[in-house]
Length: 69
Image (cartoon, rainbow, N blue to C red):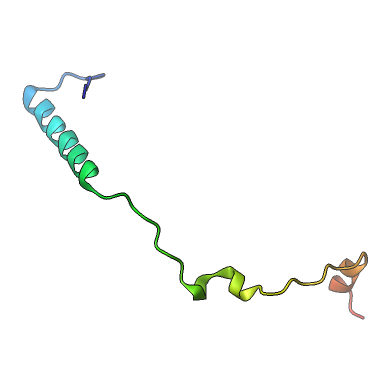
């Protein structure tokens, strides 16, 4: 692992502190198991609600949605 200081002039203590944090994060990231997606519950499945398809509207259906009668 190579780390390069792009800006500034850190002291040896500041650089050591930054490297400690980076190394600790790298170790914990490698130890964590990969996250798996939890299975969906049946009650939250949208296909349960939409079991049948609605009929397609006709060519003049937009007029009936805005005008009474």
